[in-house]
Length: 124
Image (cartoon, rainbow, N blue to C red):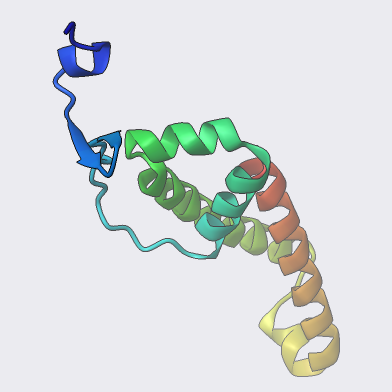
C-alpha cells in the first residue's frame, strides 16, 4: 500500500475504533499575559477575521501577536491621553478648582483615546 502525503512527511495515525485519526499537535507557544487590548483583538479576530485567526493559531503565533498588540495599544492609549490632556489644558489646578469638570474632561479624553486605539490597532 502506498504511503499518503501525510505519512511521507513524517505524519502518523492512531486507531480509534474503526477510524484512523492523524496525530496532530499544535506548536507550543510562550506564555504571555494578554491584557484588555489583546483580548479585544482576539475577540475581533475570532468574529471577523477567521482566516487570520486560524493561521495565527495553527502557526503558534497567536499569543505573541496578541501580546504585541496589547503592549503597543497600551502605549498608544497612554500617549494619546497625555497629549490630549496637555492640548485641552486638563491640569491638577483644574482638578483642584472644579473636580466635576475635570472628571468629565478626563473621561471624555479616555473614551476618545480608546476609540482611536480600537480603530488604529484592534480593528486593523
